[in-house]
Image (cartoon, rainbow, N blue to C red; front, side, top):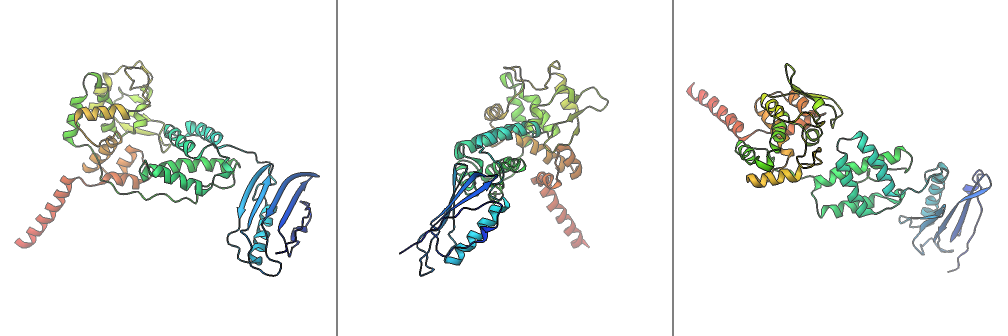
Length: 390
């Protein structure tokens, strides 16, 4: 097959982008700005038979920007006109700056973006420790790529790898964090699009709701002796306030009003960003009065004399000692919400205490306990008995 090739110089400010070619196998485009060659774009394998529209090869764009090469295939092309349309679209995007050729956009590695995101997270998010964990997984799987090279396909690969070791709900939380990071990159014009926007979340399976029973609570407190005694006031605080683990860990004495006429706790740093005031039960008040109030934080690690980083491991060891299975610290918060709703407390009040921005979240805690379900059935039975008597 005989092929002909043409090469032509383009000036950024003139209109000769509208030129067309009948037989093209290679095009070199030089876009000039103030007389300086800034970008070289090569389109190769843009070819077809001189006597036919039959495709002779796979068509793709291969172009170089500031020494960095990018490849863009045109798999949809089935004839000469398809490729010409792709060329026109490419040129239009080029002129509109879609490929960031006009802007002085610099290379940014993923690790640099992660560092910037963690700075943001530390200031703006109460769950910044989780973001450190999530981004470490991202580093290990994706590597230190240029963020402009990270595509939805790469994020999908991340999902597949993580799915082998963690549950769908965990992956979805990680994706939320990663998506926020890339949104910050878009806002700062480091990238054009968030690669997570086209990635679907995984379906989360319904799991049996877990809350602490009275018998399990007794077992836990019996186990809070000797080296585990320091966990008792922490557990009481969780069960009597419904506070999040992070809120309990970072609770300061300056936010605890023990000697007010109606004792309460101020939660200043919350997940929703709204300050909460939680009334204090007499049981919790009595427990807090036993603690050393000369420290900044209420709950101090007895070994390091510093605030806790996490309670996951010590709480797990306590549960093992007490013989309580499949219980996490977060289930204590769930238990508090469940007990309030079971006692007939209005959902709006429970929402305010737990600090939910959406009442739909509070409704997850309003599942009926077995005893209340039995009471409901007995009420129906009583109603039917009255009809029979009449």
